[in-house]
Image (cartoon, rainbow, N blue to C red; front, top):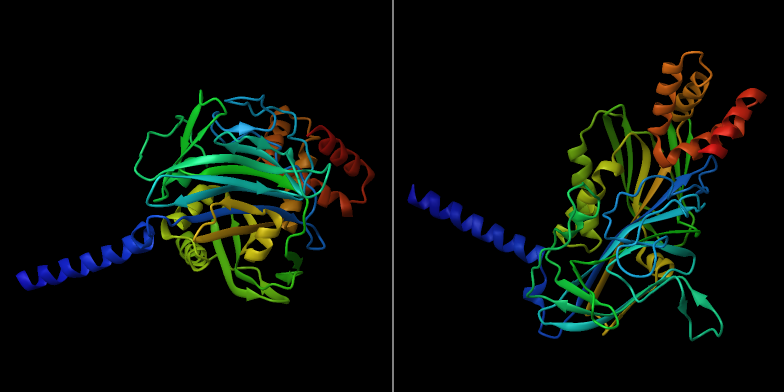
Length: 402
């Protein structure tokens, strides 16, 4: 019995040792080393031709804590998320990039991210410059992006970070071994500490993947020269889950829509493996999935894929000084697909808005709003093939008044 207990203890010790080596890099760093990891999501909606279409990514309530700054807020701390800007059209929603830092000693680091084809809309901690950074290389030109200036890395501090009672996508990203960072304003009267640098935005740039429905199949096409890796075709139909995994895509392939006979747990395993394979630590991969689990896997058909690293660097050039020993950036593309079933469902509810029953009309309106920020693109998709003049007029009115 003692031998069995000893053997189990030894196995557990070895397993834990391996686990902690995979979870943290501090033990592998020299005192002057710096490692930077980042993850984020680019969400788009595929049109009938498979190419990303314009939509209103900010149309809806904010899911962020009130202490997060927004482009609609005033200068200073605790900006508000207000209505202006929610109606902005864009092809891509850049969702929750977070930048983690790993080091064994306190150090100062300068950090900025350029966003040449987009606009930063939310961020935390406060940054010195947002969306108006002067470019010294091109006289008179201003670049979009965010510049935090100098931040202080504090590997030995574990403060109580700001947190509100209400749920938010924001908090799960803290569950990593990254070091605490501190940001101060110019006269040091305001100090903010966090586990990462956070920012979001909207943009108009070309993503590498196009997704087109062809009957019961999807046509996945890579529009760029770099190979796209770790694609997951996912569908949730009334709570029934299905997915198909595509290891890589260099040109074009046809994938059957998944049979909804699988479990979410299997999808999570594949996705976590893909994120770790791209260079994220296990805790970072888990934090990313926990951040977006409720919306990534909601009702609908979508394709997840990992952007080639060179493309992420082109879309969001990151500058960190001093230069890190290692920089890993993992951005997941999320292509939402408007299915014929979604169009039929929305069209049916639109018809019920003409009911003589106030209760029926109210329920139809509620059902339509369940589509959230994808509601308007679905209406526009229906409009493309609708021949009935009365229906077209009603849909157009819904689009304009949404």
